[in-house]
Image (cartoon, rainbow, N blue to C red; front, side, top):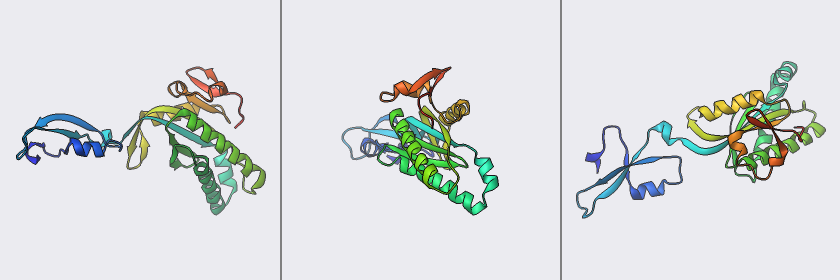
Length: 213
């Protein structure tokens, strides 16, 4: 089989491709080849380049933005600020428990999470809102308040984190999102079923009007 593979290429058989079918790898059919010792040609597939192989198609991306981070950072000692941010990140992890979602990364006062559907993303944000309310009522640390944006598309994974057009689009939407609100891009809104009534069209995206996050 190796003699058919071009330099720096990686080819696999159909059986290997089947085992990898539910992973992040993608393959291209390169045809059938007659191999020594086989009576019938064997179909082979080429592993795509590393960038194409680490694409999650149709992913729902959520970015949350913590308000007043700079002001609180100037008023708290470094260790207290770190504890405050650590709890903020832990609230996100609690919010996605039991939901098909995961926390991808934190960038200062912003958090990036992914989900399989916009409804699950919105559900997680409702959980986060409830957890924030408990914190603000019971904890001696400074209060949390935030806004969030939801976009859907193809997510590119890299060694440094999630990147690509979907991330840029979500950050752009987050910038347009009013303080204390949740916004949803048009593509994600098309797939919302349980929470459609919570949103109102505003330009090319949709914003919650009934929730004070």
